[in-house]
Length: 71
Image (cartoon, rainbow, N blue to C red; front, side, top):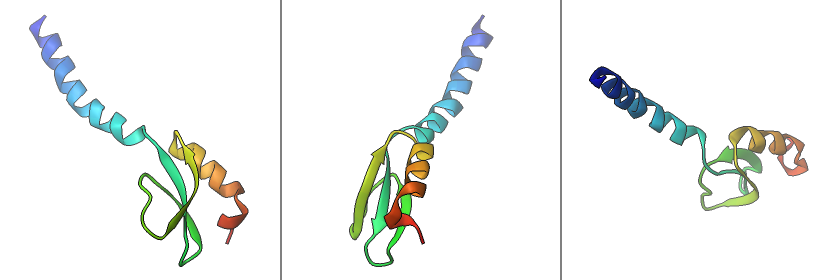
């Protein structure tokens, strides 16, 4: 029984950080100097926020449809 608890703790130690990297808020940001868009997790100075999304995939899909982001 104790082996199962230890195994669960070890697995949780590796899974939790991975989940943190895949969840959160993503932004489509337009760099006002280079006029290029990118998906970011944090807006930086010189960027115009084009949208806020719950997943990276949703942000990438939205960015593909934004006329300001088409090269």
